[in-house]
Structure formats: C-alpha cells, structure tokens
Length: 330
Image 1 (cartoon, one colour):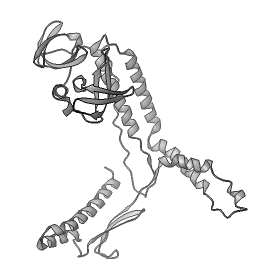
Image 2 (spheres, helix red, strand yellow; image 1 turned 90 degrees about the horizontal axis):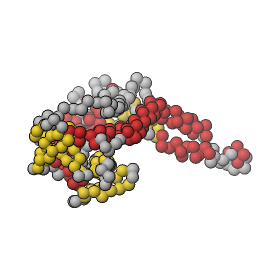
Image 3 (cartoon, rainbow, N blue to C red; image 1 turned 180 degrees about the horizontal axis):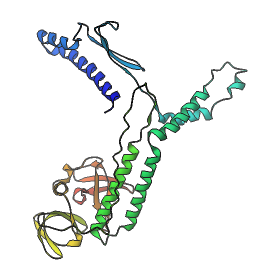
Image 4 (tube, rainbow, N blue to C red; image 1 turned 90 degrees about the vertical axis):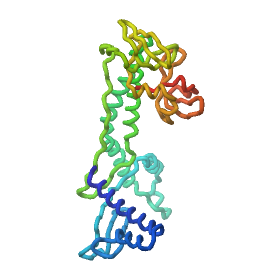
C-alpha cells in the first residue's frame, strides 16, 4: 500500500473512531462515558480532536493550531481528479460554441473559455490512454480474441474431452477480457501534491494459451474424481476400477463403464459443487454450462434464480433451464 492511502486510512480511522465513541456515550453510564472522553482527547491536552476538510486538504488536529504541544497531527494535501466521462459534453460545448467575438459587439454576453475546455479535452484524451495503459491492454485483448477464435474453430464434438477443455478455456479467456475492461478507470489524476506517489494498480492477467492436442493424456487412477457426457448431459463420479480401455465409475448410486477417451479428471471441489444441490453453488452472475440438443457445450451467466429453473444469459439470448442440466466449470 502506498503512503497516500496509509495517511487516508489513518485520518478516517481517527475521525470515525472519534465519531462513534461520541455516539456511544449515551449507551454507557456516566463513569464509563468519562473514560471514553479521555480517548477522544489528545494525550498532551484536554481539547477534543478536530477534523477539518475542504477540496484541497484534510486536517486532523487538537488544541490550538499554534500550540507547540499539540496543533496539527496530520495534514493530507488531496490529489485532484477529473472524470473522463464528461468528455462528450466538453466536445459538444466546443462544437456548438457561438462566435462570441461577433456577438459581443451587439450583446453583453458572458464568454465561454474555449481554450480551457480544449485543454481539458486534450488532457482527458491523452491521460486516459496513459493512466489506463491502453496500448498494452489493447494488445492483451487482441491476443485474447485471437486465442478465442483459434480455440473456437478447432473445437470438435467428436473429441469430447478436448472439446470440454477448449470450452472451459474459452470461458476463462472471456473472463480475463472482462477483467481488463472492468479495470479501466474513468477517473483520472490531473494534479497531485509534491512528494505524493500513487500506487499503480497491478494487473493480474495470466496468459491462458495451452497446447491441448499434443498434451499427453492424464493417467486414470482409482478414486479419482471425473466427469463425462452421458445421454446429452454431464455425469460426475468416482473411478472404482481402471481397465485397459475403460473404467468403472460410480455416480448417483449406479455404476457406469466409460471409455477412457470420454473421461475428464476434475477436482474434488468441482465434484462436490456438481453433485450436491447446484443452487447452493451458484448466484446471480455465476458462469454455468449446459449441453444443447446437439450435445454442444454452452455457457452463460445466471440472470435469475427460481425454485425449479434458472434464467441464463449469453451472447445468443436468454435460456430457461432446469437445474439438473446445469454444471459448473472446473
């Protein structure tokens, strides 16, 4: 955490601890309240703490400001910001501006400072790119979209395990693209006091590219948690016996003999989420999957949760789906 944030936390920590101690006086007996009063005072004087705020600074002090013992305890010169969302309005003012030099000869009109507005426009356009690292983020998004296109075009329902993995990667890439967009800030720093350093947000965007086709098949073992497609829906189970080409899997109290090529190993966490009541594992906004009539994996975000069915939304529209058809990606 940078020093500027630490000072803000210190200031508001003092301010609101003081405020709530004062509120708390009515809840205690007189003797207890007298003890709390001591906490609200400076250690060196009997004056209450004071907090003054304006658009330029925050000041926490006690006693008289010129008192050598006390005075100002903490002063924070505030950073100034501009909201980039006012840019269209600023451009509109410039575009629709009147010829004040001509009209001023006939009317006593208050002039709009177009030079200042143009400087604001230039600042916002320039700093939005700089402070949001737009160039790097554009490259990241282009890379993500390229990966999504390649994965989508290479998917084949005939290779069910590979198909599932690629669909999960598509969803992960989509989430990463959303993270990049949601981390862009409309609020820009346009002036900061000297010696104030602002911590730059760190982007935890990981590269997702994985080689699936040439990846060696994971070794199946007894007691592993797995999933596979059965009658146009996903089944989740535990391997009971591994044979040369097929395994015996227990799921929902029954046993299934499944070809190794159709089995995908999953974590216990994903197994638990998909074998208990799925309503306990999802909420509005959760990403879920399901299989359409052609056996193709679909994905979307939960928009509404009802007793029996959920409303799921994706780029293609809204779907009302039974909870039994939904599953959670690993």
